[in-house]
Length: 109
Image (tube, rainbow, N blue to C red):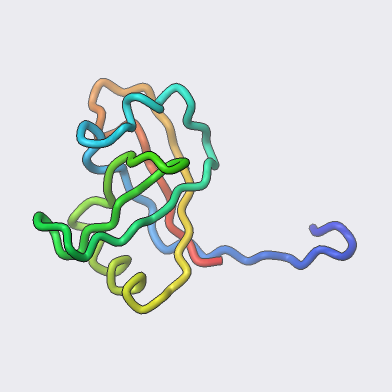
């Protein structure tokens, strides 16, 4: 329910993914500061020499990691065509395996 005068917002979930490349970004350094629901920025890296479909995941201007390679093709395609994708932290877990610590959702608004 919206307050009077507010326009309701519809969010369509596109995908939910674990963060890839945890050890290559600043995720470990900012881990204590991350919160459920924090907005994330998706940055297209079309010139990435390791993956032409690379989509970087940033938090407050700091590189956390990437959308997993096996899940990035549709996002890259959409971003290349101007689709307004948004992302947010959807799960934070103290896990021994760093690849399972951060999950995020990508959605259309």
